[in-house]
Image 1 (cartoon, rainbow, N blue to C red):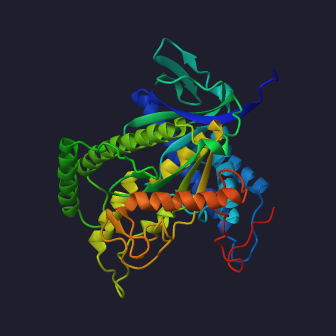
Image 2 (image 1 turned 180 degrees about the vertical axis):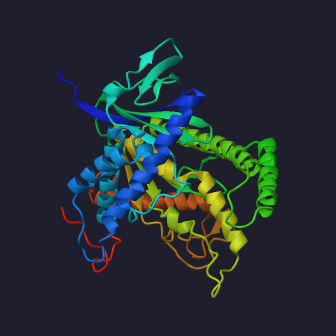
Image 3 (image 1 turned 30 degrees about the horizontal axis):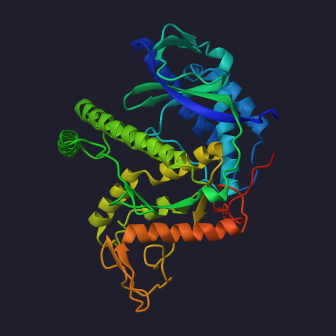
Length: 425
């Protein structure tokens, strides 16, 4: 028998962190210093943008070192964490030039508070028992973490993040797994249609719907908290700092939102794993631009939008389904299972008859009913199931063209070459 080929799988595992009160204050100071460091680097690189006299990354590195010497409250951020901020800023520009992300911008006080620990040897993670362990964080000390999952085989770094539920240690690592053989096309394929009424509709006629992300009591409590926050906000003059009571109300709302997000993410994990465990060789999905679909319809003062409240409600329903999470998890899990994820054009999938290809207007009579108006066909059934079959058919056409597995849309550069200049190195 031949030797099995191994592949490296990168993973990030989140562990709840329980720092003391003093350690939490130090972590918060480091996170604020990291945000200010980002803004200083951004100012350093965009100050001379009009004259195209950009500083080099070496000059930015020297400026960071000097700033940590001159400003006391910046020195609370470890040197390696400060260097990681510069690396993240460099990568942000590369992503922008590649057309996959927006242009790097300023980070406000509402940005996520995080501190990087780029070197794994600084962590010194030690397991105390089956559930608990300790971790060493530079300039913070030894903190306790809950090891509810196994650590990666090779730890490459970590990041400490402040979430609504408290501090979390995100450990980056690598695992060596056996590279799977590509699944044969004879094992079949499945098309999935992501929707609001049914989160996932499969081409075989079945549906996968999650349980409510909030119980009836939690939803009622969230509604009361949002009304309470609106009343507390109305009593404060515009532009003033929120009161302590309003901040406490926001914290309670954030806790419920975080619980909702965890449940949505858990559903996406379990669903994608179950889909690939069926043994299919390919999964066909729509190449949806969720960010464009959930843009606000508020408009401007001169040209206000229409049906703004209805569009806002639809946006919340779309974002609550986790469409992007499902696509992302499907893609990397398919790579490890030897399957393929094929993204197809989404235009007309809900208005095209899968049986005859008719696109006559008005065939989708309602959200759930599709009735083909072609006299020679007349297929009638669930509209989401019809869309899933159309997606499967389009994916099979793409598969015949022998494209790369799990290929996504080509990145389109967003910057205008006349206005966005590349910094000189």
